[in-house]
Image (spheres, rainbow, N blue to C red):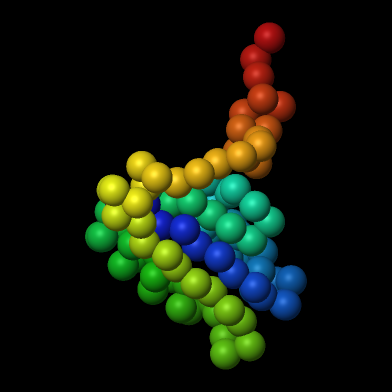
Length: 91
């Protein structure tokens, strides 16, 4: 299932931990937004790890997208991971 994860974390150390963790599971699309294609078993694993890092001061939201909704996602401009792929081109 595709999931969109957004977060607002003021503490640099915790924010960096969340970033590194999410990068292992999906694509970084905006500064505090990740797009994940993840099964339920992996999601439970990730959810546990996220909950061990965030505090009451932090905000983290997960938006699950059903297959039908995923097909209707609208993109405009260039996504961050497309830029990363272009910058890592092998010549």
